[in-house]
Structures are given as structure tokens and as C-alpha cells.
Image (cartoon, rainbow, N blue to C red; front, top):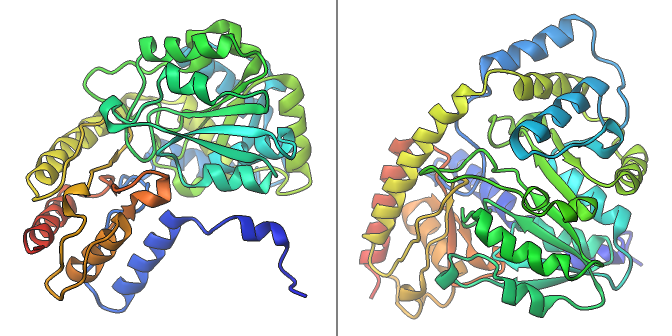
Amino acid sequence: MSIVANRLSRIKPSPTIAVTNKAKELKAAGRDIIGLGAGEPDFDTPDFIKDAACKAIAAGETKYTAVDGTPALKDAIIAKFKRDNDLEYTRDQITVGTGGKQVLYNALMASVNPGDEVLIPAPYWVSYPDMVLLAEGTPVMIECSPENNFKLTAEALEAAITPKTKWLIFNSPSNPTGGAYTRAELKELTDVLVKNPHVYIMTDDMYEHLVYDGFEFSTPAQVEPSLYDRTLTCNGVSKSYAMTGWRIGYAGGPKELIKAMSKIQSQSTSNPSSISQAAALAALEGDQSFLAERNEVFKERRNMVVELLNAAEGLECLMPEGAFYVYPSCAGLIGKKTPDGKVIESDEDFVTYLLESEGVACVQGAAFGLSPYFRISYATSTENLTEACARIQRACAVLS
């Protein structure tokens, strides 16, 4: 009898982490690898945030904190939700976890019963379905077409809802596509949700501040206040503030759910790092002007990458509104042969070919629930992106 629990057979390791690790292994072996798999800003954490962490250490703020966040950080999160999203919460409606992933996981573990269905628009962040499965729920994928910029429509949402539907997981701007929903698009979706009072909404707003071309971010409970009591609005400091390694995520939502999530956390990790919480407090309360400066760099990278990918034979790439990903189609290359005679039969074959032939690491669309596409993160230097796109163009050109 195996020591490993049966429930683990229902899930797979994170494909994005697998690609990143594979790229690191090849680099360590001496290969010239450009990694475009990780969703991690290449910018450093701003100095004022690091200084706050150092001061916290010097002041002895190195003890346990409240399980789901310090009062000071909760107050800063409350102020952030009011300032940015016009949402009002009290401390007992706020939870802080070890990264956004833990917040989502805690919510699902605290609320999903066996047989409950969780709606997940596809393409989706790779961890959503597996977290639902670990919670003994049933992930239900809703395919979102490129004709609608990979965004969920009201018609598709309405068709997917059943009496067993417990949650809709909603991510905007999207990982992996970068697509973001306008207020009007959100209103169409929230109108459907208003008519289905048994469905709760879990928003993943991690890329909220990473939007371009004057796009105005909105979140569902902001657009439709009547959904406030059914919405868990999740966010964090990882992406916008370049704090991936600090591991701080947070959410605002119904008191009953927040209390249940705290109960889960009290028996797993307990409190997030006290020093990381001090850093997150500084991030949310400090000068936000650097966000616009960094967004200009991301925007320039996005524009360049989309242009260069569309110049590659057989690739088509939409222009996303936010995040730092593009999700190009490689449909035009399926069925073609590599120089050594291998047939490209899937997006996984194509990304394997890119890695082996040109040393460019990206993630196959199958990992995100929609093929034949692949995800590229442009959260790396312009120099790396220019070279990577040249290699991709070269790899495509020699297929026959």
C-alpha cells in the first residue's frame, strides 16, 4: 500500500513551475536559455518597501502575529479596497495569507463540499482546477474563444451554471492571456450572477495595477454592489510591487467565510511572515508613483513582443490589456515538421521544440486549458525579449 494519499492522484504538479525548473537545470548545465515561463517581474522590490522590512527586523517584529494578519496590515488593506475599488470592509472581513495562492486555496477548502461545481473560464491559471480537486469539488471549464479576446461572455456563463454551482473563479487581468474586462463587460456577467443567488464569486485581482493604454480596472463587487455579500475579492502584493518572494496575499469577503478561512490557516501555516507583513504594509501605504513608471516599461515590452511574434511564420498574437503575458496561437504550425523530421502535433510539441532547438522556455497552452496556444511572460529584460523573439522567428521559419 502506498504512503501517498489517493487524493494526490487527482492533481498534477504546476506546469509553470516545471518549465521554470527545467530552464534552470539547462542553464546550470551550460545551455544558453532564455526563460519566458515565470510570471515574476524582473524589477526589484522598491527600496522603501525593503527599508520597512529592515526596520521591522531591527525593532524586533519577529514574533508570531495574529493568524490571518496584523491589525495594521488589515487596516492598510481596508484602506486600499476603499481607495482603489470603492469597497468597504471591517477587520473581521479581511484575511492575509502566505501569497495569493494560499488565500484562494483556503477559501476553496473552507467552502467546497464534495460534488460542488466551481466554474473556471479557460484559459485559466494552472492552479485553479487542481485546488478545486483537492477541496473535493468539481472544476467546470468554460472555454473562452479568441474571437472574444479569451473573455467569458454572459451567455457562456449562464449556460454553465447548474444547481450544483458553488463558485465562479474570475481572473482579470488574466493569467495567461493578459485579457482584462471593461466595466460594461463585467456588468453583463454580474447581471447573470444576480439572477443566480446560489453562486459565489471568487475574484483573482492580482494583476489589478498592471493595465495599459488607459484601461480602467474594475472588480465585480464594485460594479454590482448587490453581489458584495457573495464575493471574495482576492489580491496581493506579489506582481504589482515585485514582491513574489515575500509571499503576501489578501482578500476581503463575508465574515463567515473569512472566519472559516482563518480556521483552515490556523491548522496549516498559521500567520504569514511578520517581516513580510511589515513590508506589505509599507507597499500599500507608500508612494504608488513607481507603478506607472514600471507599467510604461511593461507596455513597451508588450507592444514589441506582440509585433515580433506576429511577424513569425505561423503565429498569431492578440494585444492584451494587462498583466505581463501574451498568449499566441501556434495553430498555423500544427502538422509541420522540424528540421530533424519530428511532426509538431500539439502546442506541447511546439514549446518543447523551442526549448530544445533555440533555448527559449515558455509554457504550452494545454497547461492553461486551451490549445493550440502558448504563454510567454514579458516580465524580463527588453534585451532578453528581443533575442527570444528572434529565436522564435528562426525556429518557425525552418519548419516545413
